Each structure stands twice: as structure tokens, then as C-alpha cells.
Length: 240
Image 1 (cartoon, rainbow, N blue to C red):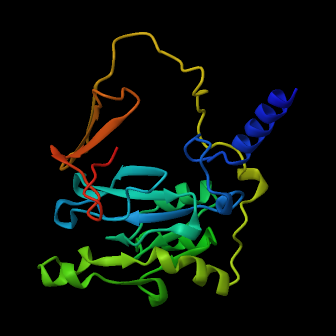
Image 2 (cartoon, rainbow, N blue to C red):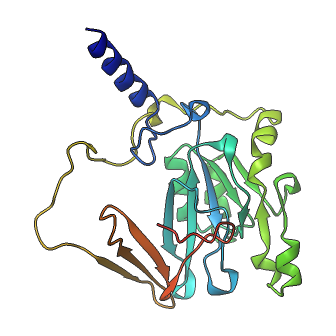
């Protein structure tokens, strides 16, 4: 009976710590029931490597103009955000995705063709163009010849203090307290019919992304950008 009670308690704790973004039962206690943060991230060759994005729970890579892409990195725990570089402006569809997560929205600059739509969403957002408390320039990048637009930093480590002092809502709305994807049970994996999918190629025009299945862990795919390993500049780790 004691073993059954312990198992039930463990299961209840795991369900409590469910990360709605990943389906994993590893959400820190401080992040339970709290809003995520969605950050616009530069993804062009001249801005590589980005840093701070390795710890994102979900990354959307979406085409913008000229066959390029930009990323929306979403973090479940707003109280332990890394510093992230480089941060860029939105396009109309990015804030809509962030809104769908009930997330705080972080960007540097605006899409001049979509400003009316953006402001009609009335989002909890922070813009590096108008609010310097959470943003700055990476001095090392400037010294190393990066163009100014590729040096913008979001100081994630300051976010908790700022959002608290601003009195913003930090609790997740009840309508969003459910997994955002249809995750399978890790104890009962589903094996789809057909051949193994070892490589996924995504062609955007001027850019391409490739996901390559790990030989050691078939549940893991490694990320490449334009044929090159895509890493987090802080850790040197390849995105996966």
C-alpha cells in the first residue's frame, strides 16, 4: 500500500510539473502556472551564432522576406531566462503565435505594415526600440565588426524584476493550462508506419534548415542552417 501511495504521489507531482510546451514533466516549481516568454530572434548568416536560444522550450523558424527566416523562441520559465542575442523586429504572424501561448512578447522594432494589427492585440510586450531597461548592445560583437542590427541583446536575467515592478500579469490564463501539442506518452511511444525519417530538409529560398537524426538517440534531431551546424554561441552546443 505504501508503494502504491508513493507511486500515486509521484504521478501527481509529475502531472503538476508538466511543461505545456514540451510535454515533459520537468517544469521547475517556480514556473508552474506561469506565463511563458516569446522572443524574436535574428536568424540570418551575418548574425550567427545566436546565443541564449539553446534553453528555449519551443522554437518556430518561419520565412520572412527574401527567402530568409526569423525565429520565435519560447521559454516556459520567465524567472530564469538567459540573455538572448540577437533580437529583431516582428512580422504580423509572429505576435499572433505568441498570443496563442498567452506569452509575454519580446522584440526589437516593428513591422511598419502591421502596426495597427499588432496594437489591436493589446499584448504584454517589451520593445527594445522604446524600452531600454531590458535591452542593450553586445559590445564584443560591435568590436568584432558585426553590423549594429545584429548586436541587439535582450537581458533575460532582468526580466523577472522588471515584469514584477511593472505589475504585469504573470499567471497563465486558465484557458491555456493544457499542452499546446498532442504529445504521445513517453512510456507508450507510437511508431508510425513507413521508413525511418533520418533527415528533414526545409527549403525557404535564400536559406535552408536541416534536421539530422542522432545515431545514438533516435528521438533526437540535430539542427543545421544552410548546411552548417547551428550552435548556441554561449555554450558551443549544436541546437537539437
